[in-house]
Image 1 (cartoon, rainbow, N blue to C red):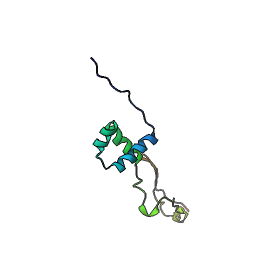
Image 2 (tube, rainbow, N blue to C red):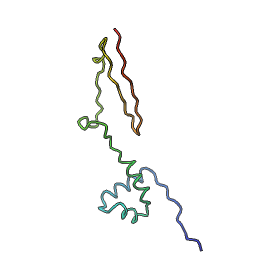
Image 3 (cartoon, rainbow, N blue to C red):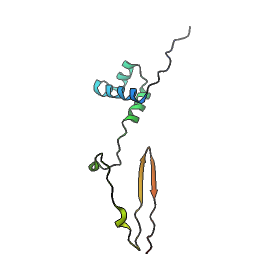
Image 4 (cartoon, rainbow, N blue to C red):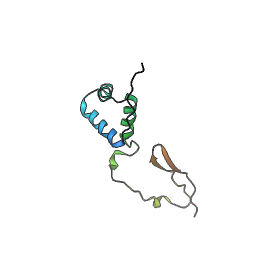
Amino acid sequence: MTPTTEPKKYRTAEQWQTLVDQFKDSGLSTKKFCANHGIGYANFCNWRRRLSTPDTDQPKSLGSTPQFIDLGSLDRPGQRRWDIILKLGNGVELCLSQSCVSA
């Protein structure tokens, strides 16, 4: 006799977000919530992490409004330019190295 297994249920990101929100309001431990909803613990933790990625690299004082800095004032002949790193998310960074500004 073979045990019956349910087919794997695929959820959209929106469905996972709903489950994460329900978990936050449930007051249950993660394991208990997963058991009650028939969700794999590791899968739920993975989706919870993916859906709640805070932007820890952005200073808190900037809020959600993008801030721009005019870097033109940094271009002075004979001085070195600043290194510029643009963090694009998911660990991807665009790095512009320092170079000497000629007159």
